[in-house]
Amino acid sequence: MAAHSHRSFVRRAQRVRTKLRVVGDGKPRLSVTRSTKHISVQVIDDGKGVTVAAASSMEKDFKGGKKSEDASVVGKLIAERAKKAGVTDVVFDRGGYLFHGRVKALADAAREGGLKF
Image (cartoon, rainbow, N blue to C red; front, top):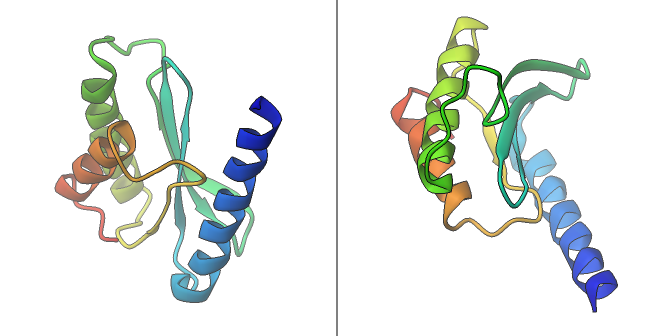
């Protein structure tokens, strides 16, 4: 059963990234990675193949709380760091995750922080 769900996840992630390439128009990609306890996000410039900014709930000075609250804090952090790096417009890459719960909380906080997607 687990192999099937992983395969579905990978297929969903590939479908999302394929669509992003079409609508992305050369914008950096805001890529989310989620585990059972933590969430992390990167702003990636695929044209150059570099990570422009990153934030994670696993950072040394991060104060843990509820997982959805952590996601909001990470969203605000990434918006702040991306703006420092000169990035305001991104495309949101949710990977194979559904746009719900922690992923949605992170996206909403990043938008509040000034990122446009």
